[in-house]
Amino acid sequence: MRTFAAEASKLASLPGAWIAMAAGVLVPGVVASITASSALGAITRGAAATAAIDIGYQELAFGVVGAIVLGVVGVSSEYVTESAESGGGRQITTSLTVVPSRLRFLLGKMSAIAAGGAMLAIAATVTTMGVVRVVLGEHAPAWGSDDVPRLAGVVCYWVDTALLASGITVLTRHGVVPLAVLIANTSVVSVTYLLTKITPLANYLPDMAGVRMFIRKLAGSTAEISPLTGGLVMTAWVTVLLVIAAISFTRRDA
Image (tube, rainbow, N blue to C red; front, side, top):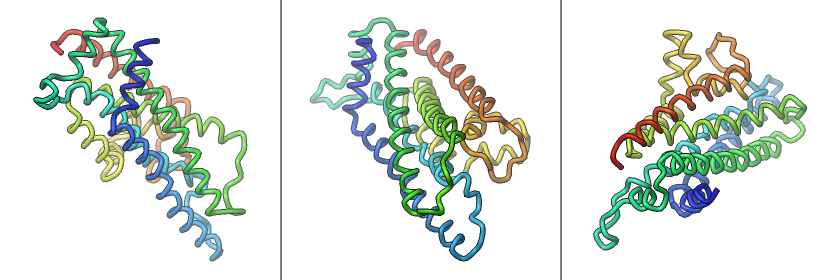
């Protein structure tokens, strides 16, 4: 518990973590306001809004970039070389001096990132869904019991994505590559989505499977994957990656 508290405090002190928080809340909220405004215009013209059932949820899938940044900076900050005035060392050296057990240190680190990702997901969900309801007003989709597991799916997706990003960063020990690759895949050109056009097996890649937890109509996809199956598949990918990262972390030099 003390290791978790120390890692949570360390994470909260990182400027990059606060940037991730801001991006994670603002990006999906802003995009949702644009999407909802467009949908409202279509409704007032008598046209059916496209994929109205997923308004807000689609934006939360896009806004997961905040969780990616959180996961990457939470780990990469350990490997940043300090200035000469500060001794020119790295945080990882101090961290492992305080917590000699590498597995306990890594568990505390991942637990702090998971908790941060969950809080970020909740804040982003409340903000994004609030924006959608304000913009659409009486035309907003009615909320029911079906939305509870969908909202839980959003949180699970963000937490898994943050852990996926942190696991990759443990392996690379540098934040640039995982940050660039994961953000590009999420917000620019989704390589995993393009792969689904080549083989249906790509639907079982972590991000493509994970979004099934809360998105009901995935554009261009013919694969039938239930929300539970999607969540289990993504979690399995994350678990395997974290095990590999833990083995690598405990066996190599800091």
